[in-house]
Amino acid sequence: MPAVSSGGPDGVLLLGGVPLGDPADASPRLRDALAGADVVATEDTRRLKRLAADLGVTVGGRVVVFREDNETARTPGLVEDVRGGATVLLVTDGGMPSVSDPGYRAVTACLEAGLAVRCLPGPSAVLTALAVSGLPTDRFCFEGFAPRKDGERRAWFAELATERRTVVFFESPRRLRSLLEAAVAQLGGERRGAICRELTKTHEEVVRGTLAELLAWATEPLGEITVVLAGATPVTPEPGDLAAEVLGLVADGRRLRDAAREVGEAHGVSTKALYDAAVRAKG
Image (cartoon, rainbow, N blue to C red):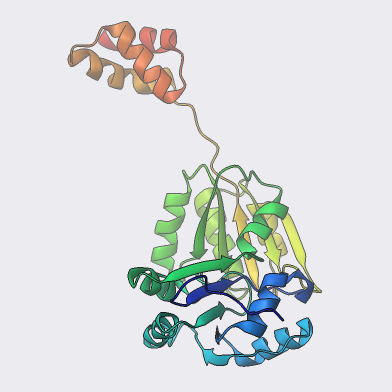
């Protein structure tokens, strides 16, 4: 296998996108990095060995366990490895490091030290779920893992109630049903979504429908879960509800028609309808 070049006197931190399930999704660059990196930092050595065996490569460098509970302690050592000229490959159990997985601290520490950080693009549960969800993909946001505590979850859903972008997040199968119950209660049963289970694995399943339909389906799902939630449908306010805003601009010196036009453009409401509503409100 070809060696992995850092491209400079210092080394490089490589973020390697790892298959979510199917080893065939691994990129040639990931294969080369597994064989050629000086250090491989991984969440689970057993999964690393399995991946290497599936890909037919031998991990040539020193293997370091790097997971959430030791990320802070292990990061300085990885930075020193890179500073000393090593190519350090960071992989997780699946998907892209630092995206709701260990890696962010190592990335920021290397950048702060003026060291190179590069990415070996590969599988991502976020983008895979978004692509197959059937929901709009032009604008979306990623929320990591859904909050566990009831109060935090309620506050989170209150924010999502008006979020117009498609939302992607992770959830434990054990908490999926309670999350959907809360979603139906706060967002309404008609909002659409998709539940993606075991993406790219043998028992992959994607269920699409309204939140009420998804709740009815979610009895005891197993496996890794990615949820995609449709953005909120914008509600056009009634002209009468905006009359006070128009009159407020008038009080600041705007002509009534100019104020109606400004407010109308901001809210997607007809200038004439707002003008008439403001006139009525003035009495």
